[in-house]
Image (cartoon, rainbow, N blue to C red; front, side, top):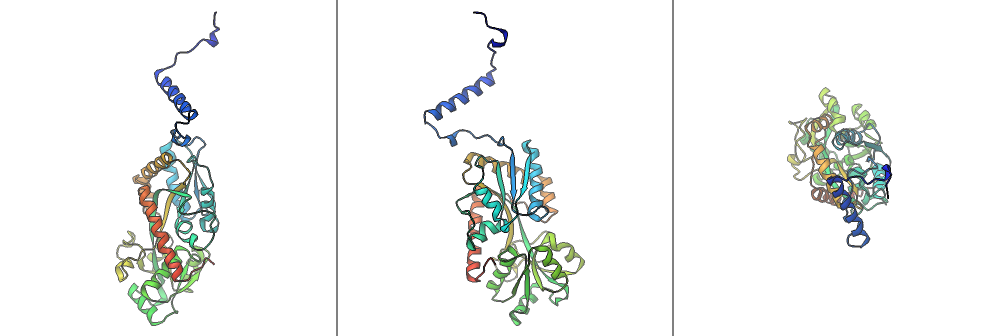
Length: 341
């Protein structure tokens, strides 16, 4: 029998033959029940495209960090990385979406301290912070800086503590909202120093900044990206930073930890996480790719301009860190009788 030209068999290259053979072997193994679907190598990057969720509005600190990282990630992977802003409930909405989202690794989240370490102590979140998420790597870690209005008559951290002890309840501090990182930093200092400064919550950093510049509130645990120009102009005085090491932009400003309160550590952080239902091999690939971006000198410089410190970790290190943060802030919330309202 004569075959027509369009039905004649084509020669298969060695590489393609090996690929076909491998695919057939995987299918036969699945059919025979020898391996589970998760054991078959997962496609990476996922074909459907990549979404990087951010739980806050465009233009904010988390969004800024996410977009810097997403641009380099897209270049490295040769695939579009879409930053999807889903603000609401202090970031909880984006975390709910991640917990219930696709399990092929196409969705990753820039997780934050509030939804992962604070909110579970205060409300029903719609997710299990310990069980529903898989750690990928820490992204950035950055301390706040305790600042006071220049007219407050306080020039150092020691003077701040002395004034608070002399006049309990007279010194107040702004925050970006109840149970926010800036609120809990103030409550942690109250507990460790045995003082009573008064919490004044605001709906975000912008109104808090307006009032401290006007002298309507005495102090604030502010981000460097918000406070730096006003520190440089002399309108605000930086007393101490809230991390374990001094802020590189303020090398002469001590930490609270080195100023009489060892172990004080109240930093903001953003960490990459995904659904715990994503196969392990995909989670491991995400770890590798994200650390590669965070180690890139251009990314380090770009993040540094906004006051962020890239601090990539192993997946296990991030998991342990989040667990410690959960315990630390749970203790502060209970002891200081803090609510989310």
